[in-house]
Length: 189
Ligand SMILES: Cc1cc2nc3c(=O)[nH]c(=O)nc-3n(C[C@H](O)[C@H](O)[C@H](O)COP(=O)(O)O)c2cc1C
Image (cartoon, rainbow, N blue to C red):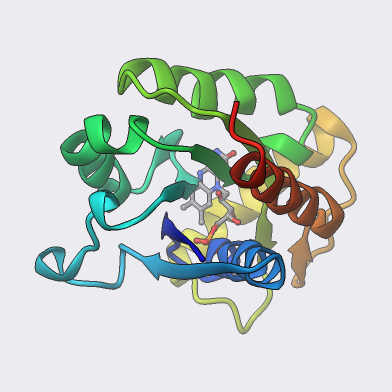
């Protein structure tokens, strides 16, 4: 069985659910998958890419950046990551707010170039904007995200509902990414 590592960074859980869906599709296609949120695990327990046949790395975007633990992980393991099949994804709101090009350029392409990675597959997925009363955001952060939601509505006409969890993830796109990665493992280029 091909051993696949999905190392990701998620703050409020939506990227974690994306990573779990990728893992589930890959498991159905007979891969042995470890999916781990590096933002929740001590650095000393982070897995090594060298112990896997292939890796997928991903992060949610916060203030234009990958989460810090992911940036640290990639900087530390960039050689090992590039020596095997590598998939890269981000989860972001720009993708669904009419800035798909910005997300692919800045969060994916620039990140790959900055770290000298050799990625076989990459994608920018839409994320979740939770401005409901039950969201994990602090009062101040919720206000900031509500203001961001107003801007997004104005700029892109995106249908963002007030006081709701707005989920812009496209599960078909996410599952297709996993199927493409699985094909890559079965037919290495
Ligand atoms: C404080 C904060 C800052 C964010 N900054 C950006 C950003 O700069 N660009 C972007 O496209 N999305 C941004 N987002 C949207 C997140 O990437 C999106 O909500 C994602 O689904 C969060 O993933 P998580 O639930 O795994 O933490 C931001 C979200 C929050 C809460």
